[in-house]
Length: 248
Image (tube, rainbow, N blue to C red):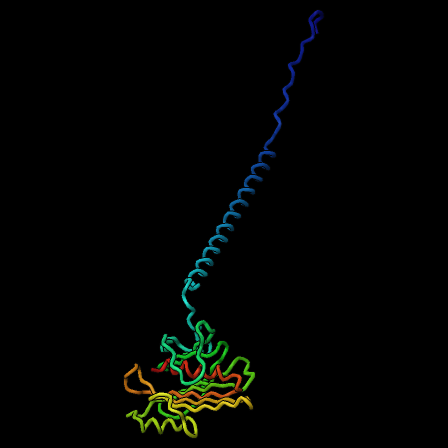
């Protein structure tokens, strides 16, 4: 180095810029993850709200309108097609004897395929097919209370009335219902009743002839045979009177 010249200074070295790419990547990943969670939560909430609306609409449509009286419950007594099931008709009660179903009383509806009428039984009763009476196009059911805890039973049979269905024919067919003398309830109805509260025994037998409509030619005979403890007589009477009401 030549003497007398001051030493040359080296320019300061610049520090390289810090790399922040790793931090930025981590932040962007976290933001994307949070966005996915928000989208999933929004989807779950939308599904939950839609399901709740459907359930509310279903409950609203199935509930009876306020002020409407409840119709008899659908039949729980047989698995049958609904195409040929008879309808239950609103009508003023026709009483053979004893008690009738009160307004608002809980009942079950019995509907038999190809029968010209439906009828009610106390709630919980079940009816099984049974042979009640012989004759043309005959059919029948045997109805009992739930659990079959006692001996109460109501047997209901139907058959065609022989043609012409006049008083002589009716007298002969009524003889199949019960032995002994029957009481005339009306022009087309006869019945026999035995009530023995001392021995807790009750029985009721009813024969009734009816047509499609009041005043129409008589076509069918319906038979009701009920028996059980005297304490259950009201239930038996209610079924018999309901059947008479539904068969003009």
